[in-house]
Length: 194
Image 1: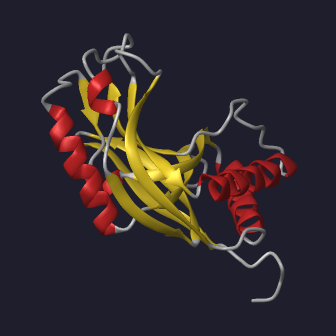
Image 2: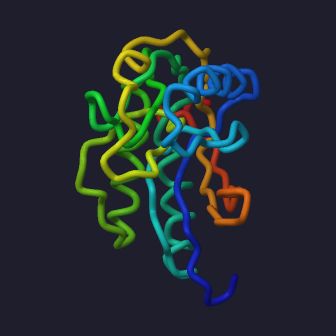
C-alpha cells in the first residue's frame, strides 16, 4: 500500500441479521428494477463519510480523525426501516433503506467526524448528511424507472448498536466491490465517566 492511493470511506458496519433482512428486501425489488446494480449483502453498511481516492499520508490523517471523533460520542442505537430513493421520484439513481430512529446520533457522529477531518486538513463533503444504507445504484444516469411505489414503504430491518467506527477500503474486482477494514475506533463516553 506504500505510495498507492486507496479508495476509502468511513462506515458503521451492520450485524448479520440486519444485513440478511436488507438483502431479502433487495431481492424482492430486483424484478422491478433490472437496470440497477445491487449491493452484495456482505457489503451493506451505513456510510458516515465517503473519502474517494486518498494518498497514504491522508489515510493516516483519516485514521487519527476517526479515533478522535469516536471518543467524543457515546454508543447509541439506530433502527433501520423503510425504503427510498435519490433523487425522490419515479426514476431514482440510488435505492436505499432509511433510518427511522437514532438518526440524531448518526448526525452528531457525522459532525464530529467532519470536524476532526477538517482539523487535519481534509475538507468537508459540502452537502447535508442523510443517514441510509445503499441497496442499489442505477447503471443508467437517468435512473431506474418504475420504482416509486416499491420504495415508498418498507418494513423495519432491525436495530443496530452503534459502538464502533470503521475506516474501509473499497477495491473493484470482477465480482463487484470488495471491502476491507483498514482501521476501527470504538465510540467512547464523552463525559469521561466510563
